[in-house]
Length: 248
Image (cartoon, rainbow, N blue to C red; front, side):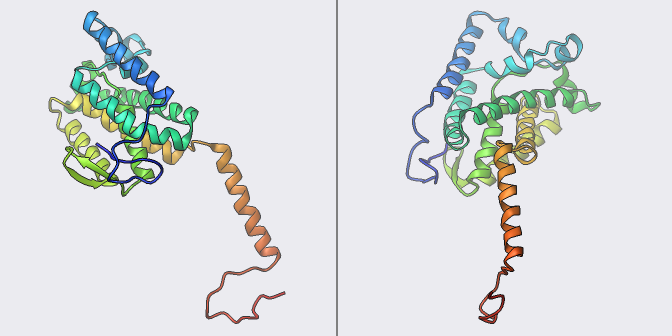
């Protein structure tokens, strides 16, 4: 889907690099859970996200366990491929703790938002309340969003054929998820979680800092620089300024 190596994506390479230990564990957990689903059919019902069970039975573990279940081999392969393609580079940039925090927060946050959407008094959301939601797509869509914000103009192959900038790729995904959720068609249950992942990911990245202490230090450094500029009467000028202006 995406072709890049290193910090600056390139359309002539074929992947983000080898799997980190963190991604190996995440992918391994998803594969093991999928195999368990094949041998224990009730796994999906017991561990999938069912909004009515979360609200009525307070079965809050479903907000986490649903992320490791998948409905088909294709579903699993798409999510794990996306996790590798987008997660590898984000983990390099953020570090493992921040990456894992983002993945878990957006995955659980997408589930919580999906439950709230299921409670809305609209026909389009009625089937979501009693439906079963499974898959890592909420967190994966959030990873796509984060990667697109980091590399907005990097090419992504739409339908594996047409290269488009990452920022437009994510906008298309969001528009499709919103339309499917609002129309109440057969894919509304999954699309609601996809859209929720995008919304939670955006809120997290814009409203919360991955490293609050780094942000504090940055703000303090900018404040100190401004204070020093005022103290020494330093002003930004251009070619039209007099050469002797503000010289001490």
